[in-house]
Length: 422
Image (cartoon, rainbow, N blue to C red; front, side, top):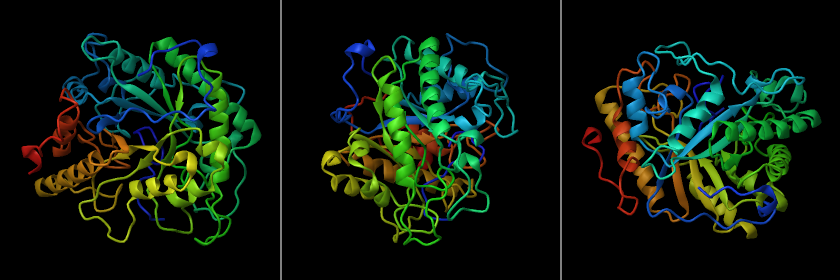
């Protein structure tokens, strides 16, 4: 997850640009949309929450000290998509007040400088808008919004098989919460419009098959206990669909946003379980599904591939057969995704080659449209970034992602491995 998340990214392991039009003319999203046009080569996306690293120079020439060089490096990536996580539990502790979408952020990385104060999501949207209207960028990046975190007032009580650190932010949503959730989507869409940011893609919830985001996953602490997560996710998808139907402009759901669990465990649900258990009216809402899948220097041969597992699960449902995939979280770090990351020269080159292998695999898959790097500035809680937290060095994986994105010809074959990764 983005650097603002309290618990970092849930991760992928198995352990414990259409033109806008008036709403009245917009086709209802209850119809099953056609899959998006397949990019000729895998497109790139990025998660990065700090506006200091996203503003186009012409629109925001004055940055906090220590950011200018790194902003230039971030913008040189030129991803076609920007992913914007919205941590609702942090933004609306009081149901009598709207969500604080302009909540100030210090711009540090969990206390690590450089820092630069911003108005949170408001400034992030303004920065993205500056990229979308910049000349010569072909409309700039598209935005995917993903929501996570249930405020305490919106959550049900503890139950089932929960981790010892489970709290309200991960628990199932109650009736008042669903009303607040719909209002949050409406509020965010209005803010994006006010800031001039084009926001088209919406993912109702982050990692619904992971206990950090929906807990409990099972009533009993056994992988044989049926997953409870599909029913909770169903409520959220239906509520998001309802809210987006009332929002102006062209809106599309991106469903899934699944953690990469493909073998059963007591406290996680598998990708396969989730897709099989969702009702028809939910799975048929989108032909674009998202999966998290982190590269590993030494892959686990006993773990089924998450993207392949998702494709197979979707193909078992008539209305999702052949649906397209977005890998909305990927990156590379330590032996265990999200664990301690070695940063010696040899280790970093090995990591870069591992990331290159999965990018090439997805580029060869006609159903995978885009892969999103998580994150640009490394989050110490989930260290898979492209530059270090203190903004003093870029890792070889930065060169890799720049080679795949940036200004390269989208009709060209996959780029060669950068020299820094060899």
